[in-house]
Image (cartoon, rainbow, N blue to C red; front, side):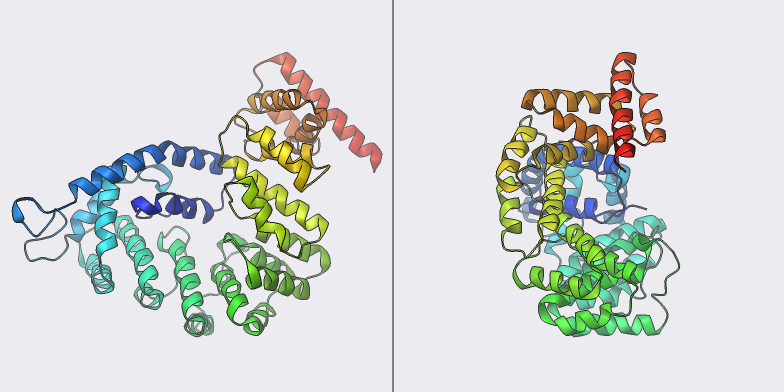
Length: 426
């Protein structure tokens, strides 16, 4: 089950970012989610103003609104039903007006009201999925006010990914680790000792212990480096790589430097560089000039810097539909990563598209961009990345989806030539 979040007017896109970043998404899934978010930006802006107007001063001097019962308490059954009705595919709400209006109400609730709501909805005759959905929203709100109270309200750790509450745990522990590291450590250690965070899967992305340790360790880097390093030491190198790579927050100053320090001290050089590149490359930065600033004062090797920049540029492209973005990337790369212009553009072209949905359109786009920029290396690099270095099975499956036989043959020849050149160079 995908997570579902209340989305406040001012936090609409932040909520969407959380929706994007807390899943194990394929590139095509990310592309589709990004498209949905963009389509709703205009709706959010319009709906939020209308919701504000309709939710304004009570009519006819009445003190209550549609979410409030006659005794002054909140109608949690109505709220849960409204959330269920507005829920769309992939957990993204379809009726933004209704959900924004509801969100405004939720934002006004006090810590006590949120806790009261979490207790009361368990007693209501509601569909279990609706209970999980509203609990996730309330816990997310409560975490912003009092993360320790949110952990208490959560109860035992949720180990099943099919439960919506699985996803909100990371937010809560990260917030608590920032505000009260000792409390976050105590909660983690108690649940580890009680066996409630034992791994039941070989998939690192689904391992709850790793999912919760990662934000805890990353927050401790700023407040208690020794404890962060001590917690990391008990894991295998592969798990350390996952823990240190799994960052979606903007790291600055000491936090950035300490992440690099702990990674170099804890992992072999090749895995350390991989973790560093991933940790800093996972971020979503919406402006090329800000990407430059983001890496300016970080002590990266040249290879790490190149990898980080390439990832950040791909993320930038994924969230940008401007017709000029590839030219912008190309020109920007000449200054920030000389000699990498073609690779950066090619990576942006390939990472923002699915290899399988419409490979012909993707290839034709690469042809157009390479021609418009006058750099044939863009096409060469794109085909190499898109075909997975000329992988025969990948090429075959892609070509089967081409509509134009001539274009299919052009792609096949380029991909196979690259594969042959790669083999000859080995």
